[in-house]
Amino acid sequence: MRFLHLADVHLDTPFAGRRPEVRRRLRGAVREAFGTAVDTALEEGVDAVVIAGDLFDGATLSFQTERFLLDELRRLTEVGIPVVYATGNHDPGRQQRRSRIEWPTGVHVADGEGPVRIAVHDREGRATGWISAVGHATDRETRDLSSRFPKPAGMLPEVAVLHAQVGSSRGAEDHARYAPTTVGALRERGFDYWALGHVHRRQELLDEPAIHYPGNIQGRTPAESGPRGGLLVEVDGGHPAQVVFRSFAPVRWETLDWAGWEEVDSLDALIRSMAQRWAAWLEGEPGARCEWMLRIRMYGGTPLWRALRDPAERETLESELV
View 1 (tube, rainbow, N blue to C red):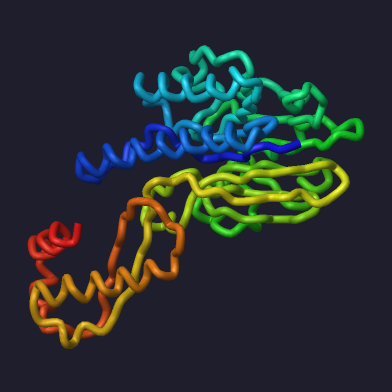
View 2: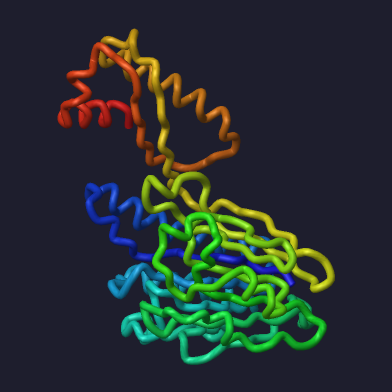
């Protein structure tokens, strides 16, 4: 069974505190990333797409995003690719706006009312595996939802989809302790692959059975740096899962710590030095085709220190560097 594992899309994140033009670009970038994920699923001819919670950022879903999402999902279901979506703490089953969406046939939503389990088939109609999902009914789920999954049965690969905090995962401390669980609890359930969401840092928690967080699909803050996207997964039940990361985010966040400004004594010299450093940094990121949200932290002495303490002067520098 081949499928695309997505999580933490956070459609309609408000990006409060950003300038209007930046806010519009970042909101659009989240939609663009999801559209690229759908393109990849179609190009790869996957058997299914799974979304492990927080498809939406909250209850303020816009008409534009609702229409976009349904159109994108139909691109998958109309060619026979099912979508299995388990709700998370940002988009729980009892959230009114989300719960009223008329999902296309072929979209299976686990919204906290009970486990969802579907058979998955390839393009020739052959059964390739099973996908089970359990969602959050409310935005403050404190139970270990892994215990609610049906027991795997049969010889075909079994995949579980869950939005949960595994306490030992890297970055778990940055997220609320919703649906808390452990690697041991997941391993004992007997699934071949756990498609997790909630923690925004991409990571493998275990290789056999495979337990993965794909990270969020588009970075939202300077803390969420690096490429963001989803996981292409292949499981056959007899061998370790094959997992490949695919980058989908059109905007990438990075924080760069640079020192050595002692000889920089004018605006042009500062811009020239930053441009040279940026070009050198990019050489270490071959194939990175995206826009950038950069935070540059300057260390050490410089003749321009007084100007750089002035917010208005920094704003001028920012406009010069764009």
